[in-house]
Length: 453
Ligand code: FAD
Image (tube, rainbow, N blue to C red; front, top):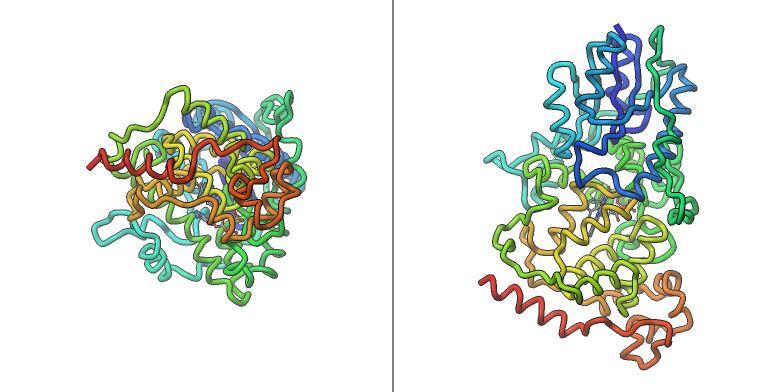
């Protein structure tokens, strides 16, 4: 009998344990299902649809080179897969485990036909819990506990050939899914920064292994030079596995800091595994009573934030980078997120949704855990009252050139003036004044938190 290989966020042939198991079992029918129903509000966002299109097209090509095909279907995974089993006479489905709640819902419905394999994490996260079986709240404790599982096993090589069935089931045409934007084509610059697919992910990882030594020093500086790996969308879509990346960099000097950041992915998936609605519910229920701003003024402020017109150069540079390239530097994600939640007193979930739609690396667990951490509403120890100062952050991390690149109105300003052109008295006429003062925003946020007691 043939077996189904169900691709999700693991679009690769190397180190693909589900593929490996499927090939051992016999003829393989690889399938990708575009499921916009089960995830509800969390269906794949706009920027990631662009990525997905290119990644699937690259995967289909690689499968073809192995004598196989990629079957595309659309609908609820838990309905499409049983239909495919009946249609092809297959009895088993091989897949890699993922922890997003909609995947788990689909997995539960598939029952015994589904055979899950680990493959998306550095370590078996279901075993990294506190003594009481709870997820770790603090990252450093999680990281300590994860060490006992390192190094991970060596990555699997890709199979030479992938045997196919006598008769292939029908497939949708990728173009019919209309994953790419048309009018307006807001993704037109994505191709300058990104080439989705396994081959590029591997090249990027090789290249990164040469530069990983400077990570600790360079990672916090938002510049156009690449101080971080920029592997996040490749990792999200599973075009490279964490253990391949581990194998790639662990021989390099000073790779520890990077591996520690890489393990954040495992941590955030551990959180959503234990708390599936963490993306929509405050980790600390106390904050359910917080009175976020929602009126017309707040809507206008939200628009200014989304379009990069807040009058805070570092915030605007980040938000424009996000819109134009589908990605934002980590330090600037922190600054822009904090600005929305604290200075504008807008619910973190509103910002989280915007990121979900705009990021090529949008990740359910990663995005939620980071937003709740910044907001101070999460299960971790961070406080709501911790408010980042965007202007001094901008200066401290030397964001001048980054701002010049993304906010051309300010390109002519000196290093001294560019972080706060209002204060320097040289704000160009075509650049907006600050939509709220730093002290004013800070005090409003603190006052709102005080009402919670
Ligand atoms: P590198 O610094 O090279 O790190 C390598 C990999 O480690 C990353 O690709 C990522 O998988 C992981 N990693 C690094 N830092 C973190 C972190 N703080 N939290 C979790 N994983 C991390 N990352 C996402 O992948 N998807 C998201 O949706 C996402 N949303 C975020 C929202 C906010 C408000 C903030 C503050 C951060 C968010 N991050 C998210 C985390 C982080 O900003 C990105 O992972 C990182 O910027 C990706 O760039 P890189 O691949 O060059 O990272």
